Length: 338
Image 1: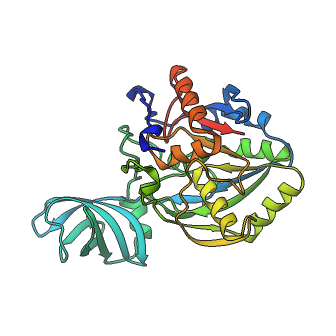
Image 2 (image 1 turned 135 degrees about the vertical axis):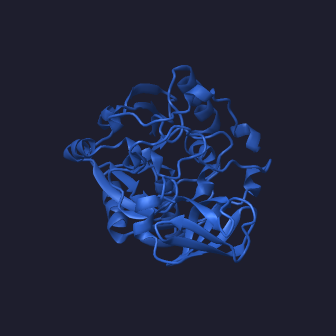
Image 3 (image 1 turned 90 degrees about the horizontal axis):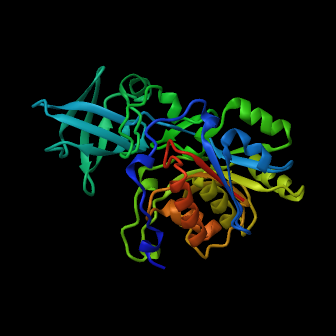
């Protein structure tokens, strides 16, 4: 297995720059793993491919407005901070853009908020300490950390949040869930489809390409996740009733499979960091179907969906989606893999 096996060419115009309105008007490609059959529809019609007792499992993490702009003190040179991980209440790991950002440097971020660089890590990573709690300041001056391939300004920051998002902590959205509306969720529940939640705070490395020639040598990012007892019970109840566990997004897949790994093959309550790297050959223990967007070439996420449906079938499906003008990546269209 080679990382180059997960490469494909995507024309730049196929990268979605803005979300569609309404959310569930995006297209949906339904892929049947057993037969290779592909059906083209719209996300609002996903209920036609779900059954009573199926269980949707979604990640309710909420995106932090983690991009901050400021100026060095003294000197006034421009600085950009992208918060990556909270270490203590006012102490964060961040990516820092600017010159001379060494320990002791102060940064004025406006609205009375200042940051001091206290530790220099690898490349542009720094540890910074803020002079006051960030909650209120981020809502005022923080910007959504859109991926670098999105060049159009986001008019409504809620469009980079799922409608069921609750707990702030991600620096990237669990994008497969962006297609759901409250009305669609209500219709699905009315037809007997269950809904349960997990929590995984998404880190920036989730989008990072695999640079090693051998993907098994790639150092997978670790993320904190939680699967509560209520969700574990819902999974086991759905399975007992003949329903399928339908993970909404790769973050839900990683959480479910991490819980199953810790539970010896059974989904049990779980909380902690996960370093689960799903490559072709992996045996899925918890997930029967998944909702997912179209992923970047050579990424660990493309490898995950290839493990689920088969590399050749996934790449063939991606080529068909490109030829039919599907929209790709975070604000793009969706797949349901069954």
